[in-house]
Image (cartoon, rainbow, N blue to C red; front, side, top):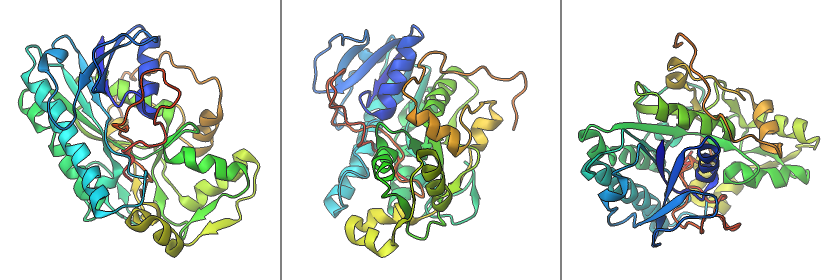
Length: 349
């Protein structure tokens, strides 16, 4: 199988690339402003410009496209200018990829185009599935437009999947990568009231779910990429302390978060109790369904990359997250240690 990936140097993109290569698949990295090359890891690369055009011929021999690129939600305090960058980087990049898929002589059979649990907005204690309506805040408006931008591919008959990603548990990047150092030094604690639900998912489960969505032709539309039992920030804080053997007495009140982060603080103190109804109905099995397993996987130095796609059972059973995690568009060269793993867009909530 040949898979094209945007955002291939971010936290999720690089992990997905390693997983696919380990299983003998071909990976084509779509990178900004670079000529075609063959990185040291055995993947290939081709240039694209998110705001303009991707040559459809690049995708002629591609089986699947995974689109993860976008400006980092948590990169800086939100100004009106940066909010516009967050929106445009997602809409323009997705539309560019979708149009290339539609115009390819032999279109890919599937486009997996990132989204986020920020789609639902602040939902309090209510359990949220893929059938719930869009929220009414900035991130929700971005997510609904983000998903709609993939319409050209869908109209052309390409199967489109939208992973609505929650908070990806990893010590190597993303929102959680910023939390681990604080907790290791005993400075971790609840954020805001601590009663807000955070929909989390381990990085290995996220990669396995991406590959599951690619491989199963009956999967289409939005899917919550979250663990089966979302927890409150207070519960996650206790788990962090328990696993790291550190106190969790510190607390940051909501007004302080607002003062430092501005409107982005709403994505931290807001609540989203999203559950993976679609993945579970499709027969996907989580390997780290609980927070303790997810944290231990994040701290493991020996995370396997092979066999990332679990077998489906014989019968299918039926911020707010901090960041959704499309990967940053400011890509470092493949193999460069300075990859922007900590600045993934995506985990928009």
